[in-house]
Amino acid sequence: MEWIWYFTAYSFLGYCLEKIFARLTHSPRQVRRCFLVLPLCPVYGLAMAAILALGGEFHATWEQVFFGGVTATAVEYAVHWGYERVFGVQFWDYSDTKMDVDGRICLPFSVAWGVLSLLAVRYIQPELHSAVSRIPVEWGTVWMTMLGVDAMYTARTLLRWHDPELLSLPALRRREKAS
Image (cartoon, rainbow, N blue to C red):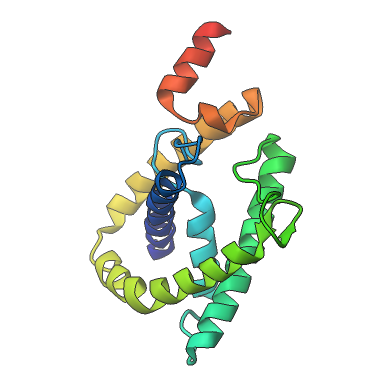
């Protein structure tokens, strides 16, 4: 059950990071999410789960940055590819960024993911592990149900309209009224 909490925590932290990044860069897309209701960006949760599954912390800082960056970038590419193939949507596009691959990944963000993985593994994960170990199993079951319901509604919305901008309840309500 601990992995669902790790996924959730890192997905939420990723959501917060996306909001901060959007604000700092004055992005026209201020609504940055990948679930309909829950403030989660699953690519972050999946990337950190993959990094932790590889064994987490490496001895040398450069190893953590390198392998964390490579792992997170591989997950980012796969998730982007999956979103395009399954749902017909793109949540991000790095085409205007130097050294991109198909607009799905790019070198500057790969380096950022490496640094973020170092910070997460060394400073966040020990505290998160301690907190997660105290969560009752029943809460995990309830949380997985909520996550599953939200994921189903999110998938339905994306499959129906192929528009990630609808992943907020007000935007979805406006769209459904217009249909």
